Image 1 (cartoon, rainbow, N blue to C red):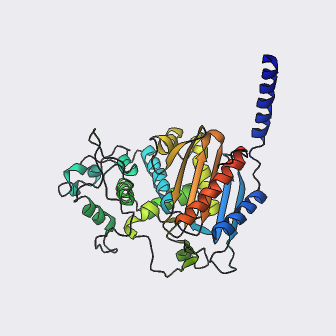
Image 2: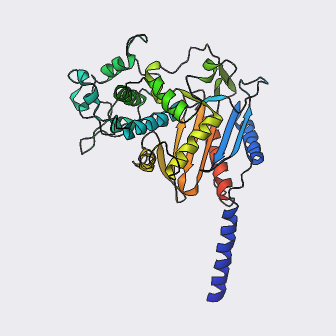
Image 3: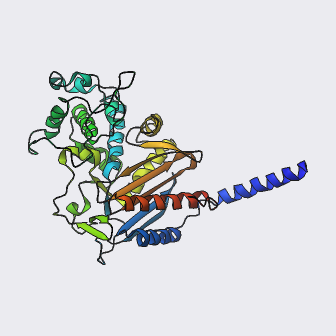
Length: 380
């Protein structure tokens, strides 16, 4: 009986290994079908999906229309808005400046801006670059349209600095822990302050930092703003509410507040965003030279749950990092599973309402099940 059990188990393990050997057979054709189902099920205008290993982007599919209700088909080089996935880009730039010894993770905000210290709330006195990236600096969230912005001239010499001056005079928005540090409070404004620190340390503007490190060094196409403000023929954003679909034309009054641009106002072609995510995967596997492996690890996994521009966790024993981004009219997701040499992206030109979240979650689970051959996990 015991011998039969051992034979049965060895056969099972052999079959399981064979299954896993062929578990990455996701093809362009199978993703085409998934996207078709998702667009029909959730009424999405356009969807882009890419899957990659450290060595190759082996699936890349973009389907749908740039503008709902038209035959203006989206193409592979079309831009999609990244929303809060832009935060990870700022983290990579910070990592680079730190390796170049221009700044440190533990650099204090007021070490770089001593002129703001006297007029700021005393609880902010010790906040650091890393705390700003972790959203543990107590900074007001500015994640809701209900939060009122100060009246600051966008043509002022440094409007973001005036925004920081405004923010730091009020009591912190986050609670403090027993250790006296701020608890996590997801904050877009926190990333504006982090960007200010990087600008001051490098002597370059946010735009110049993006151009140097992302456009030139990583050789990626990137634009600050919505895609159709770069070119009206690019994808438009949409908000789906029930059966109503609102299109956001290039001249629509809705824009990302200029004071929060570092937190979420970048756009990239889906192919370039796939390359960007692959660079992160390669970095975590020690195969990319843009940053040291320990810097990549700190950014993605240095802190549990929410690290530096990335979230992280475990699913079915697999460690992953990832990010979601939406400014309301687009949605962008990236998942990186370094121990499985896997990453994938999902992008759509419809916003972050309940329906769009369901669509992204549905596609995510379908891709994960297909990659790991979890056909038997009927509940996913």
